[in-house]
Image (cartoon, rainbow, N blue to C red; front, side):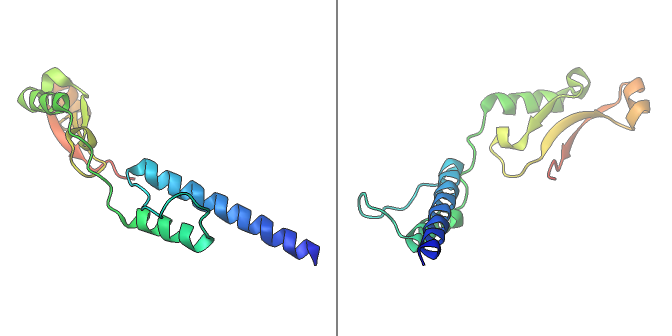
Amino acid sequence: MSLAVDIRVGDERSARADLRAQIAALERRGGRAPAVGGPRLLSLGELERVRDALAARPRPAPAPDPAARVALERMLADPRAHRWARVPLAALGEPGCGAYVVRPRLGLIGMLAGWWEVKLSSGCP
């Protein structure tokens, strides 16, 4: 019987550790744990509710970087002078995982001819 008690205690400890790690990751992502009424030990169910509440919150939008906006405007004005330059959407404060990239139009032929353009790549895996 004592073996079964030890296994349950070990399972609860690992479940608590796993939930605390998930909550910490969600808090780092930009959420904040809901108030639980002062310091106390939360049950597994309460830890799961805190985790679920944090996971349901939308991520805060990243703050736009004014230098990234200026770089994008310069890239659009003269792509040839900014070959292979890249400005991610996150730096502009826009959602998504894409980026504005200066690339040669028509691949190698465009690179040799000096035909450069700004493209928005999806960037998402």
